[in-house]
Length: 419
Image (cartoon, rainbow, N blue to C red; front, side, top):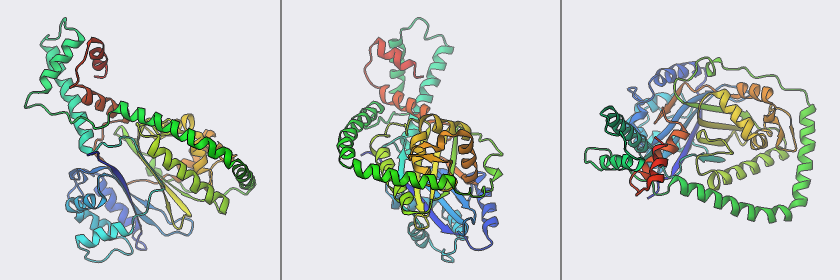
């Protein structure tokens, strides 16, 4: 059975004057998110990424605590495991929430988390169908093969062998009883890519007649949006928001990073309706087209989600990605600026846009400044496979899924190039 992944976003107001105390607790637990005593997320084998952020009390909103989790399988099962392994820590953390029951038991904690969760407006998954266990297995298989080849090379046992002969030695080694067993994917990387191409063609075939049919409505809507843009672009700029230095003062020691972006939606029906429509399209593309480790041309994102808050007046974005913040934004500008602008152009303080998708993120300097102002520090960030990038995981999965297949010399040579 193929494993599905879900995204849990829990949002709750913080008790008055307790934000700093909560930050201290999250920072303490976040120093060792995998194996701290109260919330050892490394024991939760259904969790890919998890984080806690504290939203400041800006724009007449109280401070919020937000918990993000990207998990495998059924939500109830995931919460049961999460609470079983880390209930003590969760009760301490959510004890700072305004509506959290005093002396809550595990059942009340689970009910609280579900009641205060918000739906995703759009959710992207790089490795569909792959559980935490599957990805860790792919990593372990590649490590096993590399260690075997290193030992063979050290003993000069690979001298003069063809690529096929080397692969045959690897295959013989991998079937030994004391060696890790590859858990082959039900759907391969190649099949996901083929499915993405097929879905793209189907969506184009379906969308073109609809665009033509509704072209008068689309043109009229764009004209109204353009009027709103002109009003926005000539209005007195809102004052800049304070930048949290913690987001940028310490470069991450892992290949993976985390981004939380909190924005306010522009006033007016046109902007709100446009944003809702663009997020619907984004959700469709994320579920049907961006299903092979690539989101809008960006191959470095593990999970990403957009969710609406405060009666759709604010939007929060979470992303777990590879590399630095600067390189990540550079990828957005180079490869996805139109889609990015179509989404965030409907929010306050975003650089001036034109005709929905132009301007905005294409203006690198103001775009980076906007991002700096709207990024939220995560004092607690957990990664299940902290040293693996999307590119490495894709390669590892392909190695794991093909090692047991029959090969000729050409296929064996191609396989060895992945190691």
